[in-house]
Image (cartoon, rainbow, N blue to C red; front, side, top):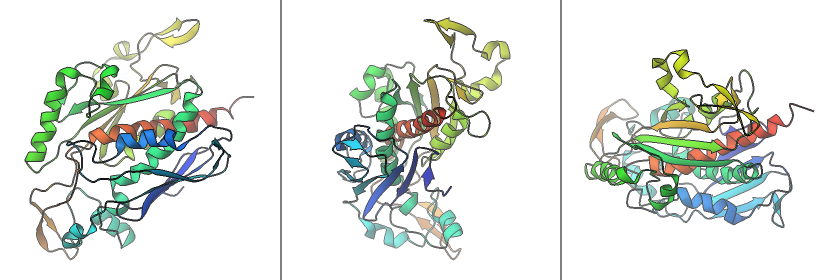
Length: 355
């Protein structure tokens, strides 16, 4: 499968560059008859839209979605769904002076090594603006999942060295940080503001939970649900780490401390604890699926950095422009979307496994 596509039965292909005319996605494999409106998609896009907070980039984009195909009279046709969002607030000229310099932390050199050509304006295809397409497609996936009772929620659990101490999901939508812990909100905000003042950036951790996922989703070997979720979240720009359930913490445990005991819950099989994060043997067990991703500090910073140009000459660089001092905030809806896309794909695959 080409590197711009994701999924098996519910397959998406994204297209567009950061400073090109538009970003978009083609969804193939969405069942017919699903009620779908522009509003269903727009509500998700608005969550990742730039320029909505002083803690994010000041780039002003409306990110209004257009449905070009696959929907008629408010319902999906079962044919490919094409969605597009126009780019409106590009300032490409600020990248001209550094077009031949390799920005530290960016994919400039690796794209040159792979393709021999790249769009230097804002990162081109490597820009996080590509994720608009994923969030748009994820909105469609969420509609399907909602029909079987699946709910997905994401939030920030760490900014820099500041970690949450509790999860209050009712507080997530009450603050621009998507922070579930009121007690640390101010400290997290200060971490981001201080990084910006220092012409720098800061990283963090996002957690995503899927509830109501039926047991039995996932393939037994190479397309394990856990493996596909790892691939999905690791494909998000700036993500450098992934874990599910207790994650790396299990390395310091014994089996007796880590195993989840099987019990009966309301007449169904369940587990007493959920250290596995809702997936055992690569297949969902019916418990909440809990995953986390670690995001690096944004590579675009205004501080002077040492680098080289395309000819190997030493140089210094300042990456000017409008960039997020912390990418975690707008990564939450992207992570939710990738979770939804993975789950809906496995849900459709599961319907082919039994008579």
